[in-house]
Length: 65
Image (cartoon, rainbow, N blue to C red; front, side, top):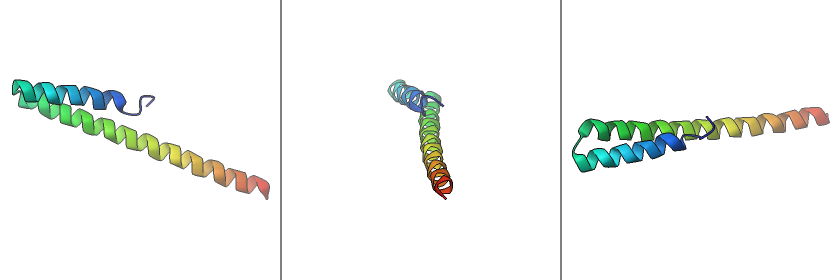
């Protein structure tokens, strides 16, 4: 998850645009799904980072006692 969903979001935007221009509904729908997938990966990455921060803070407080 190194790209945090950026590749999927970019790929989705391209497919959605190309599908819209060409009238290809399937390609446009795939693009929308790719964008949603990218956003989900981005959110998951943010949640993971926030969880790791909380765990680190708890560990610091436990170690101080």
